[in-house]
Image (cartoon, rainbow, N blue to C red; front, top):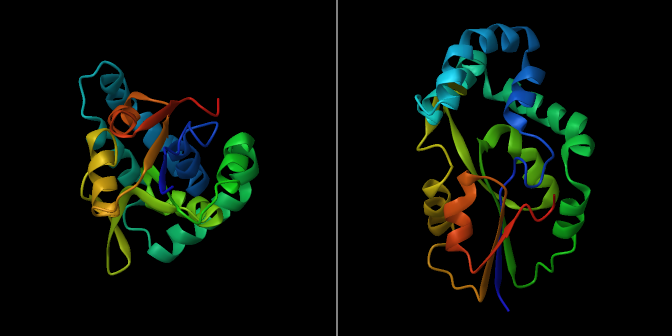
Length: 195
């Protein structure tokens, strides 16, 4: 039986959101300065008066824009090594490790940026679909390639990735409204399964 497993990352496989954690780890001084500057935007976001993708891009860009791919990758690896044990849900880890991979494809489908989720995906031997960081001459431009990988975009990216391959069963795991479309698209959906 051919199966496709789709896992949201933040909150589903982890105990907490990794964006703030990684950005703070990357440069804590810059993080706090930019966090304070972005408070008005975060408030507008909570009130549904701002576009989530724009606020996210603005905040990430304020800390990482102009940084080299080598430095960002190195920090992502250090971040993974430091936080892997603390933030990853043990039961989620066990579940993934026990999946029979002979007839199965597994993906992490995350709105988080590919840069800091990649080491986790590599460790788990899972393919990654995430919000993509744009680099020009190995320097982060502050932009994303394509859309934020959230909501309907998650389904679009999955369909592109599996390119018409047939699966007997598609199982999706999520924990927020950003996973709603992916959960609805799958044959079987698990909400807060590892909580």
